[in-house]
Image (cartoon, rainbow, N blue to C red; front, side, top):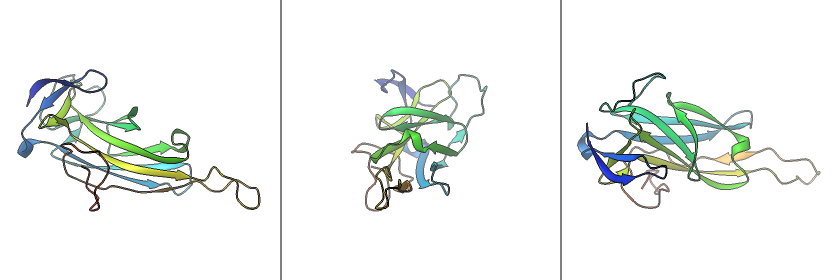
Length: 164
């Protein structure tokens, strides 16, 4: 079930180290929704099951929640692999959306001292007036479907779409 490390995340939650061969994996895909009111987020999970609400706060192998971070700020705890990210949370520009896996006791699943997570870039535009003076439609570009466990690097997807 892994051992707790002295390392912690930004909120002070300890990392729970597991060997790479036993580690859960997460991939993230972000697409603008059809209505332009935000983004559809979909996680791809391997060796991991999202726990239902009310689960006892005890670490179990390959179980827990996925926490979404926008530019390093937590925005949602997921107990299902799909989520709608409201457009109001994402201002014009490029932002990083990270999915990080947590055990039910609040510890962070980790491999080689690094959190199990995946990051996608979201580029939002549309707050500028169009030539006719009307606001343009918000748009976004998708980034990184990936399934590699993050073990360092800047968190942006590599050219193959994998998180670093």
